[in-house]
Image 1 (spheres, rainbow over the protein chains, first blue to last red):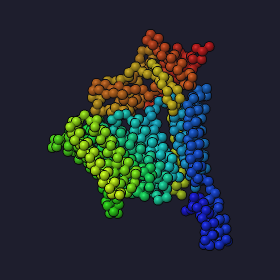
Image 2 (image 1 turned 135 degrees about the horizontal axis):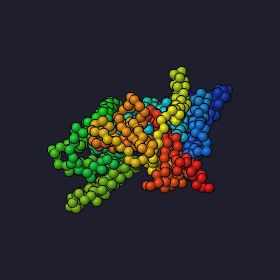
Image 3 (image 1 turned 60 degrees about the vertical axis):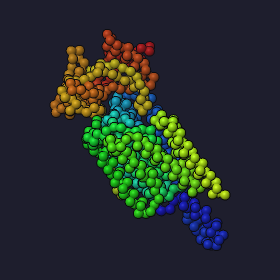
Image 4 (image 1 turned 90 degrees about the horizontal axis):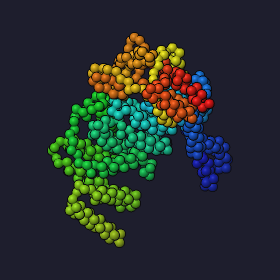
Length: 437
Length: 183
């Protein structure tokens, strides 16, 4: 299916093709006549899409604010009617776009976003008209559920991004330690087909990018709430798994992208791994893993804990499958990122028993970070990519700074370590300079 | 074709859902039992809903043995209501599920001990014009102080749902009271 971008490209090629005598004048004119109308279609021009979306969102927000002023001069009946009217109008616009403008991304995205906002507005206004004090949690739940069809009817990326933000926000409004927070997985599941269809699509790279960042960031937030953090290891494992899984998925779908900002899953995985490793480079674990609580939940009901465990198992299976996939295809993988969840899980399992002294793990994470940084440094030098060199330098220097100020290590240990590493740096420097000559 | 069917169903859902909300609340107002409660207030700002007067009630709770085994914090419970000597409605009994007979109100559980269950009423917000809300809040605070107790809220309750009918100060609806106070 051709779109206006392709048509414009073809039209731009015509003069060159004519000149090279690939086409004659008549053919060129026929092609131009045929593709000109498609090229002129503005609906897929990014500027129109963005201004359309912004316009719709601002109008939506404006309507919400004006109505929030509270028209108590009107009777209840009129207020109830006015609560529903904007929604009906939004439905009208959406229906128009759905039937008449289905190829225009600007129309589809802006009417979808507008309709989603008007849904929220009408529910909120009706509650206000009848003095119904619903909780933010209930409101978000209903709003998100109602919005699900909008993600799929005309493949709206904007709705999906708002949905991902909304469900993460919902997790922050569920009371602490309420078991039903694990319903989050159902909500996330509702978005997965949309995410899959767009992220795996070879042509929809802009959508894939936006959705990738939206999913990654929303997971970063929701993992603060959905696992039962009273059982700390649950939350820690959740993050480690998110990073590992996102990385492996990212290597499949964003593997061909050039810049880090075009690879949301990998970027989040790498930064997340770094932050977690830095955190553990300070901490030495010394707690008991209470298996009864991990499996059955502390304040969570056991069905909730088991739901989380089920998700964890599926994620683990997913990681296994993706690993096999990548190995079969001989795809390059960053084994630091892939191995990190394994490191974390072993750390939690072994650290809680008294088989090894806790400090060993602290050292292990420091070694991990050192190796991680050195890896990027080396890659950057070999491939002559400054970005990688900088990443490596950043990881290693931040590690050194942290250890320098870390009271857990004695001055003597720090002194010796820094002298050795400093000498190693000098050594590498000299070696490289000699190589260049 | 299926997509068009899904589209139509979705549009029906989107139009129907708010209309169903409205008809539900209207039915509570026209057919619900009238109950009177006495609040004490504050006034915060809810960006999605404009200004509202926050109504607080005297720590409602009801005795219940072994509540921890039956109820869960953050979920709902159901209470039956009776009237005291002054005509104000008071909670009588609390249940984990809606009772078969009699009118009942759905409440949110605040705390559970093995002797009692504390809950909050769902009618704790009364919406007002942005400019009037702070004045309303002040008036309600002033007139609900000990000794004065001239603030009441009338609520219609039907099958668990509650809708505020009116907020009164010194026997007048609050909007009227504030208008008269300005003159």
